[in-house]
Length: 454
Picture (cartoon, rainbow, N blue to C red):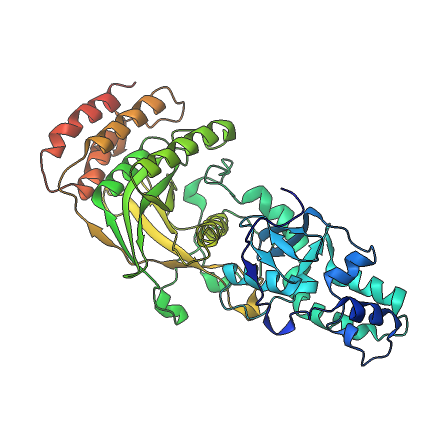
């Protein structure tokens, strides 16, 4: 990526109340000779263009960054003092405009960006470069005026540097980066969200959190969701095959007019979660399948094999990442649905897996360093007419993939005294049956394959 903006870029000017004023060349020169507490530069006069002209910073690709609520944004500093956001190519006139835009993606309640305190140049806050400029050209200026806008960010940013390194070890920026060295699921006792408080780098990222209702946080669910029974059947089948955590994508459509998210297809990831090299190829294949079917990526699922189908702190951060990624792709709102499937948790009712759709609401602005709030999503389940050949083929591919896996479930063993593992999976999948009852005969071949794998 070069240092000049692309042709016809989208320039974003809204930076909140603190946006810097654009100065002419003559005004910039006047700054060097002006002095005193009331001068323009102490609040608004120093722009990136001033710092560039005087050599305190240099243009370059990826030299600017924002860290906010655990999310990272990277920008290019252009020759004219404007900022280009790397992810979308949008051009911003000032640090405040860019910071406000990025923070509102993560937390829509955010009203301003505190740009000079939030944006870093090569790892150092821009406000420190502003202070250096003042020391050089206005040694008598009142430095407290420069630091005012830094105060709002201290609580929010102060712990981020330490926590970011810790969280990056545990958070899955992609769907496959799931840590395998978890406590046994039976030991994981869920906690209430209200007991969490501020982010704590020493807290176990695998701590499970109970879901809140939208009504409990004085919100309405901002979208409706419909999920096809074939999606649940394939997802539930995938989660039953192994004692390790699995993950997959959800394809469907988002209707902006009706605010309806329709989930039409599950795309299991046939790869070991720690194998990033293989994951890349599998994800590329899934993206092609989505495109060929005219579907969009609308969410993801993963399993908690032997534990409650509730999100962990790690899952909450991952869900926020996915929501931001989908929302930031076209600057428009599109929900991203997370689903957790708990197939072998003995707290489940009967043989059916517990399936939990959830979403994450950003914390209140005044508590911006808290965890996101996991909320239960109300879903309408739509019964398909038939078990499609597409789904059946995917099931057979999964059987072949896990056939020689060391962590495959032993389906001839007993789930409970009077129910084998194969009976358990049959019973759970029957909850997602299509209208055509012939599906049970079609699946017998799949079940026979599972029973004969040992």
